[in-house]
Length: 537
View 1 (cartoon, rainbow, N blue to C red):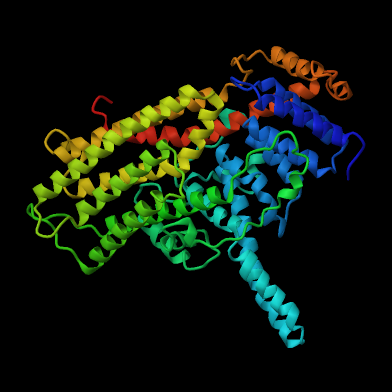
View 2: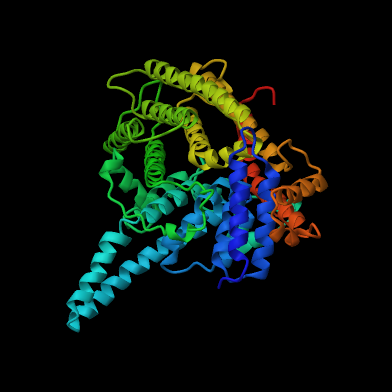
């Protein structure tokens, strides 16, 4: 239902966003706040216009206010087949905003939709054949084969579930995120507490379950098989079912959304990484300790898992270096670190034919030291990115890196640490065993990277104008001036008492706090656990 004046509000907010995008330096935050305030007022007066809500999601996405954007998305009442066509409005933002549990819940809804649709099509097509409606049966089967099964949103959802599983927060399940809790009341959460690998003792059982669950096409772990069959984006057939026509009002400024290529590359990359992680954990689970200083004999099972891991590394290497894959330097360096740690695990457990413990340790030390050098480059790349961008963009980068690269790296470091202890290269022997010393140096370097990430999230929590001012009244004044200066008199009445602008500022502040409250605990937990490598603590 569209009321008089709704289209004017959409046009004004488009103009404000356009002006923001044209700024030669840092974008003017108060312009976006003014747009958010106008849309909040418009949604109050016209609650049944979905385009106002879609526009508001776009504005809050630019303000990195994931929680408020999620609330508005929920008000849209997206359900059933609309999940496949409309969830693109919010799903990437949930990951960038650190709301990993909400991202998993929405992605799981998409997986359930596809699973139930597949079953329903079989039943209804069978009944159509029985009743003589052959064309109807053919239409349903064609729809399932050409639209639903190869759905790009289904693939993307699998990747998000796999990536964010270890970062689930039980208190956020089933609408728990709806209550805006004070920071002190956020329940404690641990990595892998609900599901997902975490570098702990239960990882082997979790990895085995992932392998079992991957047999169904509509389970998230099946992404591992999808990736294993793909070394190039050209190998993958897909159907993009997203409905882009709902953004018809974006005539001056178009919100950036993931392209088909980006969705495929991100999802398949996640499949390759998690396939490698699962295989590394499975291989470490059958490792045998050396006896009397001699290399343990390889069993048939050990050799099979070793070759599986080596093949996964080779496929990942081919995929990441494909000409149709775009990966920034920071992500590529962290990917190289993941591969180096997996090579170290493979070398520790199996090594080469007729090698000795001394030779195996020497090879592992070389691999670990190369990983430490990569970490130094990663820290430099992140600092360069943080220096050349505004604070909120650094914060969103942390939210993306945490599930994509940081947690997998931590899992492999912990897995390698367990293997080192099995081979007599434990943390306490860093002064006598070169392998223990090399791993300690790498772990502490990774710990420093975690410190850099935590610093970025602390800046992300602070909210102000483009000069990082925290003067709310000044921000309100600038937001109102950005409307009046552009002669938007028609909409100025919406902000007469400053209440709508203050409300928008509060929504952004609360949303950013909720983001950091759900990201920091995992960073702190990993940082504290890696402190065991520091002799001074």
